[in-house]
Amino acid sequence: MIKKFIQYYKPHKRLFAIDMIAAFLVALCDLFYPMITRNIMNKYVPNKQLRLMFTWAVILLLIYILKAMLNYVIQYYGHVVGVRMQADMRRDVFKHLQKLPFSYFDENKTGVIMSRIINDLQEITELAHHGPEDIFVSSIMLIGSFIILSTINLTLTLIIFAFIPLLIWFSVKKRVKMSNAFAKTRKEVGEVNASLENSISGIRVAKAFANKEHEVEKFQESNNRFQSAREYAYKTMAEFYSGTNFIIDLLNVVVLIAGGYFTYQGYINFGDYVAYLLFVNLFLAPIKKLVQFVEQFQLGMTGFERFIEILEEEEEKEEEGSILLDKVEGKIDFNGVGFKYDENTRIFQDINLNIEKGKTVALVGPSGGGKTTLCHLIPRFYDIDEGEILLDDINVENIKRESLRKNIGIVQQDVFLFTGTIGENIWYGDLDADFEDVVEAAKKANIHDFIVGLPDGYNTNIGERGVKLSGGQKQRISIARIFLKNPPILILDEATSALDNTTEMLIQKSLESLSKGRTTLIVAHRLSTIKNADEIVVLTENGIEERGTHKDLLKQEGMYSYLYESQFNVG
Image 1 (cartoon, rainbow, N blue to C red):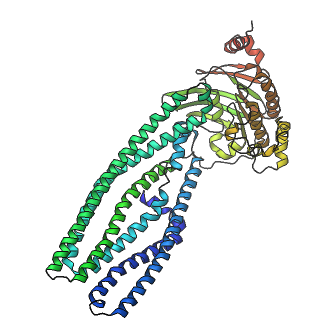
Image 2 (image 1 turned 60 degrees about the vertical axis):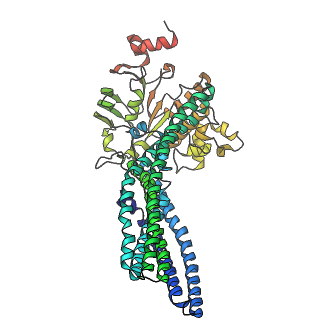
Image 3 (image 1 turned 45 degrees about the vertical axis):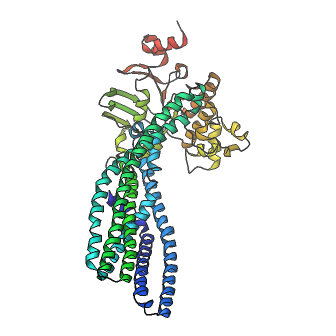
C-alpha cells in the first residue's frame, strides 16, 4: 500500500525535492539556537564579550529570516504537491470508473462511490505534504539533538533517549485500534452521503407523499451510525494522545530533575544545563510531530486504502485480438444464449433469435422476463454465461466494446440528461459534430421549434437531470441525441411508456423516423406501439414463448393475444 502511495510522488518529484530541502534547512536552523545560547551563557556573558554576543544575535536573526522564507516554501509548495497528488488520484479513480462493468454500479451506491472519491481522499493532501516532511525533519532533529547532547553529557543523553522505545511501543499498540476506528468512520461517511444523495434525488417524491418525517428518520439512522463511529474514533484518538503526551510530560520531568542533579554534582555547568533544556525542547518537538503523524497517517491511509479498493475492481475485459468495426449492417443473432446475474438469479437460457438487418423486432411479455437484459447483452453491458451473440456474423466478444457501443443507440424510459444546456445534451451524441448537425438532429426529433422558442435557445440550462423540462421534452432531446449519433442499431427500451397519449403520439412519430433503415429492438408494454413491427417476440422467464407478426400472434390465441386483449379489452 505504501509503495502504491509513493508512486504518486513521481510526477511531482521536483517540487517534492524542493520541499524536502527546505525542510532540511529549517531543521538545521533550529539546531543553531541552543548552540548559540550555550556559547553566550558559558563564554560571552561571563567574559563580557558584548561584541561577540551582538554579532551572534545578528547571525541568529539572519538565520530566522532565512527560516521564515524556507517555511513559506514548505507551506506553499509542500501543500501544492499534496493537492496535485490528490488530483491525480481522483483522475485515476474516475478514469477507472469509466471502465468498470454495469454490475459494479448495480452493487454499489452512488453516494458511497462519491464519498470514496471526495471525502476519502480529503486527508491525502495533508499526509502527502506533512508525512514525509515530518518524518524527515524529525529524524534530523532527533539525530542532531542526540549528537549535540552527547557532546555535553552522554549518560544524561542516553537516559532521555531511553524513553523513545516506550513511546514507540505505545504508539504502535494504539495504531491498530485507531486504524480500525477510522476505517469504520470512512465507511459510515459513505453511507451518510448515499442516504443524502438518495433523499435529495427523491425530494419531489417525498414531498408528494408527505413523507418528510420518514425521510428524516431514514437519514438519522445512518447519521447516528456515523456519529457512533466518529465518537469511537475520537475515543481511540484520545487514548493515543493522552498516553503519548503523558510520556512526553514525564520526559520533561526526567530532564529537569536529572539535568539539575548533574549540574549539582558538577558533571555539567549551568550554561550546559540551560542548553540541555533548550535542546530537549527541540527534541520533544519532533516527537510531537511523529505523534501527530500517526493520526495523520491513519486518516490519510484509511482513505487511500478505500481508494485503492476501487482501482483494484476488475475492469471490463477486452478479448485478445478484439477488432474495430468498420461498416455495420445490423444483423444480430442470439445462439443458445444464457445469462444470470449471480448463482441464484438466472434470467434466461438457451435463447435463439435471429434479427435481419434493417428489421424491427419487438420484445413483449411479463415483467421479469429479461427483455431489457436481453437488449443490454448486445452492447455487452453484461457478458453472457453461455452461447454467443453475433453482430454481422462476428461474435460481439471479439469486438472492442467502445467500437461496438458506438454503433448502438439506446432510448430508455428513464431519460438521463446531464446538468447543462439543451445543446450540450444533444451534442453528447457526437462530440465532433457541428452546431448545424445538432440543429438538424433536433429538427428530426421534433424538438427544434420548442428550443428556438426559449429565450436562450440551445443555450437554455435544463437544471439537474433536466428537471426544468417535461417528460416529453426530455425524451425528444434524448431522441435528438441518438439522431446525431446516427447508429445502425437502435434499442428502444420502454421509450414512451411514461408519457401521456398525446405526447406518446408525437414521440412515436420521431421514433418511427429514427428507426428507418436501422435494425431496431423495441421493448414495449404498450402493444399499440409495436403492431407494425416485422416480428414480435414474447419473452418470459421460460424463454421465448411465441414469435411472429401482430396478426399471426393474435390468431394463435396464446400469451400475446391474452396480453393484447387485456390491454385493450378486445373480444
